[in-house]
Image 1 (cartoon, one colour):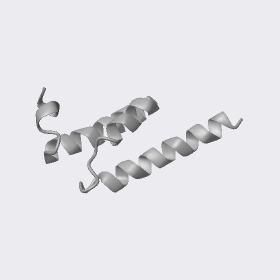
Image 2 (image 1 turned 120 degrees about the vertical axis):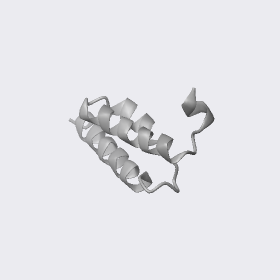
Image 3 (image 1 turned 90 degrees about the vertical axis):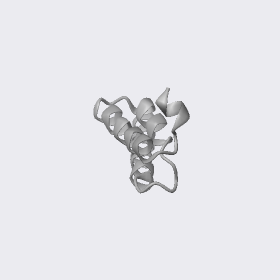
Length: 66
């Protein structure tokens, strides 16, 4: 419920980023990308989230091309 009301808060943005990190560490890549995509472009973790999405997409491309 909190996330539906306060999606612009700094805590929500950080939580989404670190949730993405947790999913990434568990190799749940789709969920990781979904969490990273919820980080706002003006938040300081946006670039890191975008970078992680790029790495995930690149690895999926490598796996699918084999």
